[in-house]
Length: 333
Image 1 (cartoon, rainbow, N blue to C red):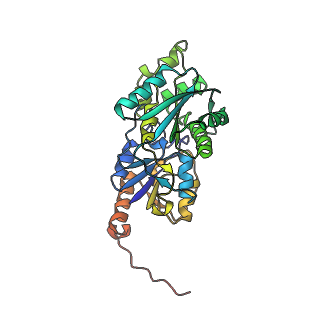
Image 2: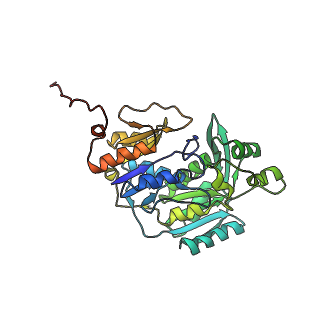
């Protein structure tokens, strides 16, 4: 059984909209199927990544194209990861890659960018968005090298007051939107797995923001508070991320699980392919997109697991509810 778990970034999902706080959900749903496709926002938690062993780590735009039937995915034993960072490469990046070697066992090389990648994050109408510059130059430079997956470790510019408000009061993660935009642009051009993690750009001169993690934070933000350079989650995810090649296709997908109130390319693709979509009402977002009648609405992830197990065991969900309705008679046309 193959499932897909999505939690879009930058729209304040109650579960999974912060720093890897959907890892337990991924483990729970992963326990119900043979393989579970996730995207980085589901499991990335700065220097933590607790994705289940049977998960496939797929960048969001690649996942969209996969569900639309435009590409297939092939599982790999290990990827050669190219790590790119702005020049001069910081010690934190080197140490993160070294840590990935001695813990995960990654195969990675580091490349300093000739043109800095500049990412500017902001929040508009409650959603995380932003602008990116230098990504085309990045693509041109890395195209000269042989690698399977690209890990990007560069700063994200954000107004200090926005960052301070997020750390103290929660809300939309302001960095996620521009990370998704950047990864999508580069992944579409390279046709390879791509993921980004920010390197810290706050200096000790701003004592209030620099020392923010000495305060107690929202538990969903805590993975950021205990991290040093936020990069290890990406290295672990890309190590065995599936590549674009002949292999698994959208017809192999048995279900997709989504938060409530958001409707995008993956939802539309599943509708067109008759892939059941399970929508979790408890995991609300700031969006209020209408949910098609074909979607299966459940209250929480516990109930979602019940629906998935019903599918797996060949039991129609209605047969274990009360009251059981009469079998419908289809009228002749």
